[in-house]
Image (tube, rainbow, N blue to C red; front, side):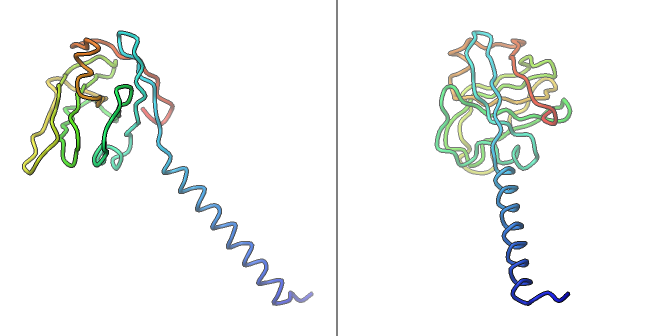
Length: 160
């Protein structure tokens, strides 16, 4: 049984389009941003974008134009540690909270300004932290956040 050239071309074309479709779907899934609801002690809910991979943590909120009062970004680390942050390529100020493994605030930096030029100041916690939450500037004071307050959120498996 001989396969005709026309049929072979049709099979290769079908295979090509299947592969192309798979690549498009896979790349869209990897670009999909993940979010988690974080509840502050006063009951206010923040929708925080997750930064779990090294690439997501390095990029953070750089180059964004603004952040709304009910938005944030939460950086998730594999281990508790003294994770430092800077404000390179930022366009607005932030409040930054470091949280321990029990989701309690262990360090607060208020109204951290965008970095203007190198060397950029670095901000580090006094105690080890597993999570770092960036919020719109003024959020700490508005919601009366203080040391050792516990924030509530649930991460999916694989997000630590």
